[in-house]
Length: 144
Image (tube, rainbow, N blue to C red; front, side, top):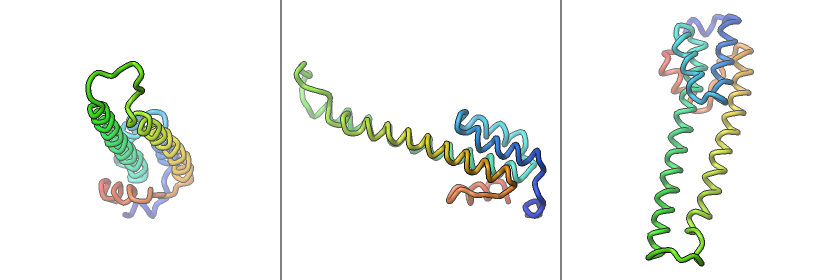
């Protein structure tokens, strides 16, 4: 708690910025490396942990969507009956859920880009800017 009242150093601000921004290109690897290297700085650890937690949440949501897509796809294909004739098109689930899955993945990437830029800039300013829900989790994990 006392470190929150102290202004972060220039190096801390830079590493916190990198932890936020690198998640756009390196997913969880960049923030994880920064967290492991600068764990003693609560400011850097807080921003790196937020980026890590966002990547975990995004990955879990992506896997749930993909699982739902495959279950729906195979159930739709199985409900069509025997071998597929050349005149039949792809299962309806493919036509409906594939674009939705693609939009969710692209939307998640755009959201990650925006989060990385916005919270990276705020970290560079020395702010303890927290993601809406994940910020509380990160504070609890690092003990801030």
